[in-house]
Every structure is written in structure tokens, then in C-alpha cells.
Image (cartoon, rainbow, N blue to C red; front, side):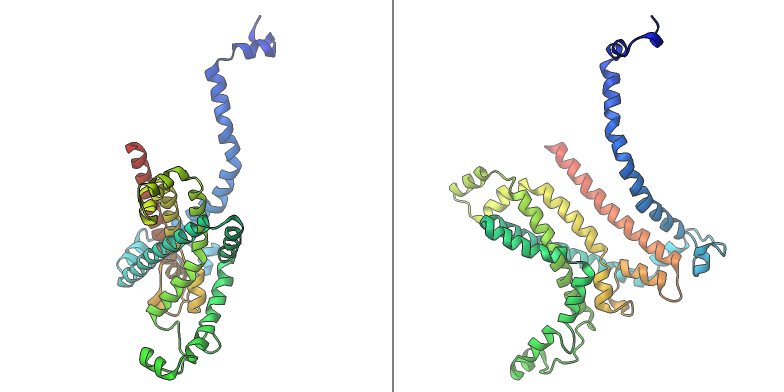
Length: 328
């Protein structure tokens, strides 16, 4: 009897386990195809367009619409950016800001996570719900609230400083009347307020993630460390932290990516792109691309450089994780 005339049962019986396993192994990849297609359309295609635009000199909307030819300049935009001293200032601002925010966010989020882990179920649920309100608030809405808090006439901070005794305020700060004081005019003070806004919006996610990781740490190990005389600090560094190291690694990478890309908070607090002394890479890219005269190619090159920096950070983390797995 030929294969064409065999019954389905006989054909299934002749199918080898290896062939059946290969057919089953393809199923997860087939299920991922719709998601991969959506990612390609919404992420990879725009990213490819930005990379392509960075190799051209684009200075008008007509060029983007295709009404005029795109002049090819190769790596000219990158050479102009990397050779500009202002770019090094912007890169320094971005790195220092991201480093400070990642450190503060991780410390505050970890402390809150440890607190939630020590509280009872009802109180922990209440505190976690209140904390998550900050994370659930859209960045634009939260930043507008913080901008009102630091308003130079009717803001809460201005009101509180005006309530200080005149002698104390003059001695500590050199002024007694704070009405009309520009909280966002000084670059250092602006970055301090921006850090406050970003950390306030970011630490709840760290806290909840750390709390989830703490639930997986066996209580027997912590109890054994306490019996041996270890204090809370020693228990955390010797028992808890080593077991949560992968969690902390992922959170550090995510926080670094988010803090490198801060845009909405800075744009709203600064009121646009007028103050170049507080520029970071994300808003620098926007300003070069859309501020008159527009330079879309130059802005695209800055965006590509920012993407490459984040890819390097992610690659270093992945390499570190793989090395730890090999050592273990």
C-alpha cells in the first residue's frame, strides 16, 4: 500500500518522535508572529526611518513629504554632533542626571519595598495603593501638579517659604520675600526639582517589584541569619540582596533607560526648549529637529546616538547576567 492510500492512523504511527517534536516546537514561534508583526510596524519601521533620516540633510517639511530630494551627507550629521562642544555638555547632563535618579530611585524604592514587606496585609495594601497612585499618574499630569507646587506666585513651596520668619529666611537664604522667585531659572535648582519629579513618579514601580522579589526569599534563611546574631542591615546584604540580585539588575537597567529618555517632565517644567543650559539628549534631539529652523537629520542623528547608548547599557547588563550564570 502506498503512502497516498494509507490511513491517517498508519501515517501517524510511522511519524518519528524527532519529526513530531520539530512540528510542536514551531508552534510557539507561530504564536509570536502577530506580536512580532505589530512590533515591526510600530517600532522597527519608525526606528529604521529615523536611522535613514540621520544620513540626509533635512531642513524642511517639503523634503519630509517627498516634494524635494533628500540630500545625502552620509555621516555628516554625526560628525557635526560629535564635534560640537555643546553635545558633550548635554551628554554630561544626561549621564549625571540618569546616575543620580537611578541611585535615588533604587534606594527609595528598595526602602519602601522593605517597609511594605514588614507591614501587615491590610496596612501594606493601603500603603501600596497610595504609593502606586504616583506611578499610575500620567507624567504630564504629575509634572503640571509639581509645576504649580513650585509656582513663583501661588505655589505651595513659595507660600511655605514666605511663612518663614524674615530673620531666619534672610540668614539662611539671603531673602525674605519669595514671591516672584524663579525656581526653574537656576540650572542646578531646576535639575533638583526635575529629579524630585522623576523619582516621585518612578520609585513606586521599584518598590512593588522589590516587594514581589522579597516574597520569594525563604524566611528560614533570614531567620537563621538573625539567630546567628546578624542585624537587619547584615541580613539584607548577606541574604536578601544576593537572592534578589537579578531583580535589582533588571530594575537598574529599566531605570537607566527611562531616566536617559526623560522628556515630558523636562519639557513641561522648562516651558519648552528655550533654556539650553538644562538640555539632555532627548530634548536636545527634539529641539534640533523641530525648533526653527528645523534640522530633522541632525535631530535624528542625536536620537540614534541616544538609542546606541541605551543598547550598550542593555548589552553590558545581559553580558553580566550570562557571566554570572556561567560562574554558578
